[in-house]
Length: 158
Figure 1 (tube, rainbow, N blue to C red):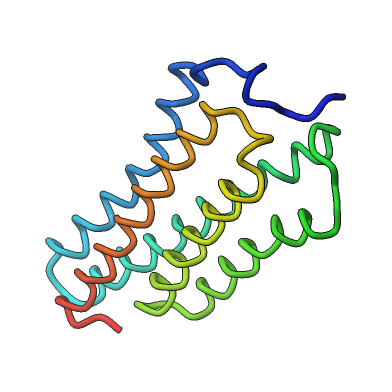
Figure 2 (figure 1 turned 180 degrees about the vertical axis):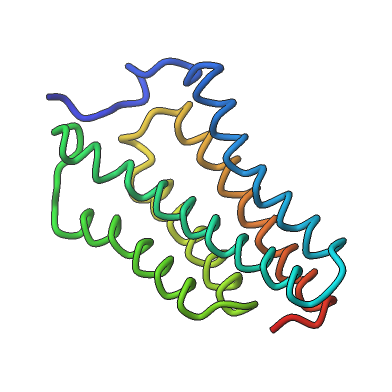
């Protein structure tokens, strides 16, 4: 199979794929609202933990696309690429174990670094529509995780 290229990809991924991608960020918005609005430490902490869990899922999901492309023969499965696709899962697991604001910071940074890797190292091989969607979703995810971290600090959560 030929590797993915900009010139052979559709201009858009399709309404359903884009809509589902953006809807996947919505739970982080709900977590942010919950940390800010729910009364009581326990409820706010639960909302914070939900944001960490969902942020970890989103990070791993983005990296899993690269495993899928490699398994389908659309991407060379070099050791470096497979390591780069594995590191987000390790960061997500570490964040879940850490918990609190440190976890939110780790997820924000890891998501940004994976986006940077994806765009700088693989940008010529990935479709433009995919890169645009990933940029938008990565930015929204990072912003919401950072806002949950700020709201957590204001709520007195660790």
